[in-house]
Length: 281
Image (cartoon, rainbow, N blue to C red):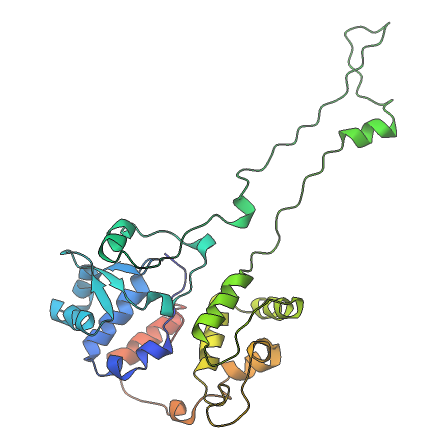
């Protein structure tokens, strides 16, 4: 299971979602948190844990938020790839992957691939062999090669390439931005300067924070140019000074800044998610 889970504001702030009973919303959040990397979760266990009912699950299915895969209430989160962008080299295939593809044969799941630093399998063992010289008058004795010439030493040198030091999925970052930040110009190339800005951002933040930055920018009427001719772009968003302003809510829509109060189940769940490092609230 991935270390972090995110929730797309597009989904959980939609009227279709908010009009559901609170228990249905609560059930959805808990299933998303417990889903595996393919977005599959054993819904029956979550229902029992929350004291919910199968009717609550049926509401989610009727609204199109989930697909029930079998009679044991194994569930697929329909908007899983909208909520989470899983890196292929960190993905763990679901134990229900065959069932998932049987029920939803047209579903495009993230294909797991090996990490770049493990493509060649285990590291090659480099053995150094000492040159053995048998002198005419010292038969059977081993010389350690003290008399070897510089040429001999160069011929015995073994060059081993260094493993990749960088594991940033720049292509995945570009693809995520182009897919979900549709209000901004598409990114066609990850230039040297763009990569440098991303490296600077990831020194103090996770990759999940970067995707959250993109989602937050997409939700901003100011940055998307909804009410003006100017709009931001990828380069503007990833600049460190601009990223900080976005995270601090400087470009948040006015209606989104209203603070709601109360002790609803969603408020409690949001506080729990914050304490446990779950992104998206």
